[in-house]
Length: 101
Image (cartoon, rainbow, N blue to C red; front, side, top):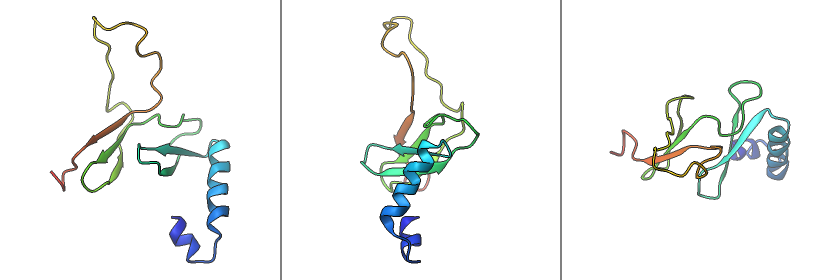
């Protein structure tokens, strides 16, 4: 998105500063998927917490997909310590997409 706006004479630093401010205002979510690149997306519902829905990243082509909320569940095993997972803030799945598999 920044490249498209920059080609229309928008300042790149201003674009990112505005995205950070929109994140702080709760309008967009910012996510980093382990590659040190920030990605921004409009929040699906007002008040949705950042990373509330899971993401899938293809390890071959790098395509990022939003998965439906509730499509992934995390269950604790009966033998796991209760204090291992206190709160899940983000779910990221990596694998090969249908095109690359």
